[in-house]
Length: 266
Image: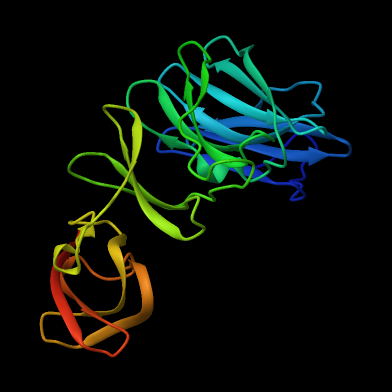
């Protein structure tokens, strides 16, 4: 990709890509330039004069995208960029704390709703819901009550229901499993009352599997060969494994087998 001056700067480099469109931002001296391109179209700079705000996230829709910029004071600016007209429209603004990694936490839900993880300076880093139709930004839930952040991570979409599972730190201080219902747009903690009811989510899975209780976990193939083992955990990543059927062998701290769960890697 050749930019205006024939150079591509890698300082503060941001790149969003999907199956049909990409946004790239590079730093040019003290300003930032945002480019849009696809595989069959030359890159086009959509910020002709550059801008002091830094692009940190993209919420893509069919006819437009909402670009998330951050200024030097960590104010978030949500701007609607319409593809055919190259027009920008500010939809919302929000003062935040440090959010340079917000782009890693943008998850498309249903319709025009997107899940973000934002530190608003009052609740810590918590889940927010953004509506790209009207620019409405809503705190979904203060998972870790107060200023402390819940540090959401390990996002995994259930291929059957499209619900999103993730881990976060609750008020008690330990990392727990949560489910975001994409139809109801609410978050609930996944609770299991006894060890015999331990479950694995999602199953089938494209990668990360969550367990409702921490165990020593061994992943085996159908021949009983141990592929990997993790101690005292409630997550295991099988994204690097071939699409097939596997077993999770769950053992307590004394290596006493509690349960075997059949899982399918898509």
